Length: 260
Ligand SMILES: [Zn+2]
Ligand SMILES: [Zn+2]
Image (cartoon, helix red, strand yellow):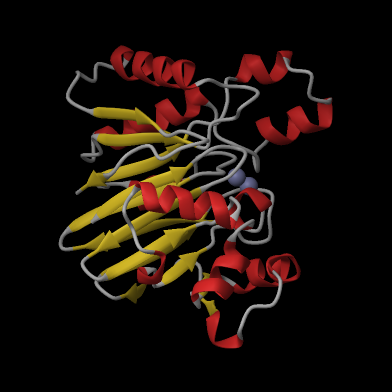
């Protein structure tokens, strides 16, 4: 499989995953124009996209989904509660392009098996995804209020992981954000801090996870350097050697092509 994180951050999220003739978009939280620009940077033809999968209805995950579906006839996949919450925001979607999956039930698209699994976040029924093909596994998990056993088991054994490293807790507490917003970000159904991301990675490392892209960084309460340094330090302190890949996705441009 080939993963291209196009945009990742609190301002908009979208990634593309492909295997053979199957090309899947995970979230389309940027404008159609920005999406198509990033896609061209990855040399991917928008007409080759088979599906847009939606994790949850926040605008940084769905902004461009409606327009892309209409322009290229792409089916949108989400669970029923997410459809109920987002359908008024997408514009008109042709009925044949409305596809419903069930959380915690795997389904196939071409050569890729997709498993949507539940995550704690302040939306109707938020999910993250694992993808399996040809004995390899890729997982994308962002917008995680706290780490659950379900998340740990779902991410185990991933050959490549895009994982949220949203904020530095001190930066949030010292930010100009009103107390309610700070509480939302730091809360159980908000976002994963750099420290908690690192702690999860320490556990996942034992199951063979060695290639991670940090994503969904807050533009106000984090920097790429800080997220990377914090996670690296915690991994080093836990006795994990240097035998791993740790990259940071960008909010405004393609991060690269990653093959498993
Ligand atoms: Zn969200
Ligand atoms: Zn988000």
